[in-house]
Length: 121
Image 1: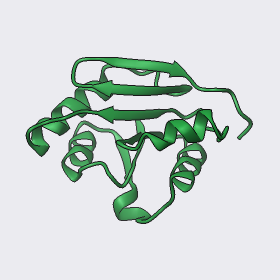
Image 2: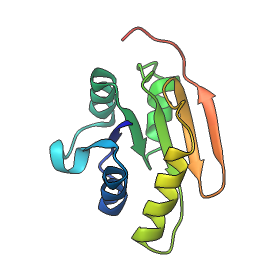
Image 3: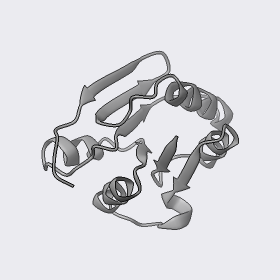
C-alpha cells in the first residue's frame, strides 16, 4: 500500500508499516512543516493514502472541498507505549484495502468509513 504518513505519526508506526512492505513516505523527514493542504495535495499527486492524527483533514475534504480521493485515515488510538500504538495502527490499516475514496477513522477496535465527495483533481 502507498501511504503518506503525516508529521504527527510516530516513527515506530512508520517503521512497522515499512517492515510489513508498505511504501511509506513520511512528512516529518521528507517535508517537515508542510501545511495540511500541502500534505493532501502530495498524497493526491502520488496516489498515497494519508494517515494522520489530525482531524483537520476531514474539514479540508468535506468543508473546503479539497480533493482527497486517494483516502484519508484518521488514527484515533490511545496506547500505553509506541510499540503498542504501532501494532494497533498497522493492524487497523491492514484490515482493509478500500481506503481510497473514503475518510476513515481507525480506533483500537473499530473502523468507520465515510465516502469522500468526488472532486476534480
